[in-house]
Image 1 (cartoon, rainbow, N blue to C red):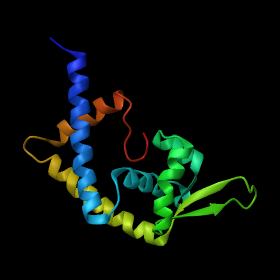
Image 2: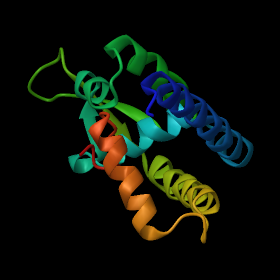
Image 3: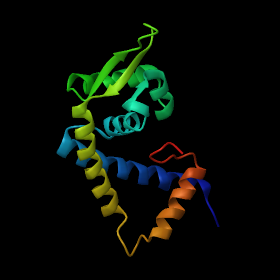
Length: 147
């Protein structure tokens, strides 16, 4: 017998455990939050490593003001910079700096190591991980490229 509420609550608890694990590693080794990492990662995937703040907010499922608040500390530590649009003074882009790109590579290596630790064999085969990914996509989850 399936119980949708039980499934949702298990998913919420699993998500919270994963967030804690990733946040702990990223904060401890790189001084950034999981939210910082996902913001930097999404920014890195944009053409030229830059996006309008409103587009970044949409891609991350955040508000524009939430993205602005998230970018502020990353700007202060030199990982992101604000670039004005040459044609429209009302538009500003968030752009990864060279330091931001280098630090993001280090963060990504940590995140990949953490993910590999979580999905160790034999409990998790490649096929099982693919099935989980498919199921999460059906619930609205997106991967690294937003698909």
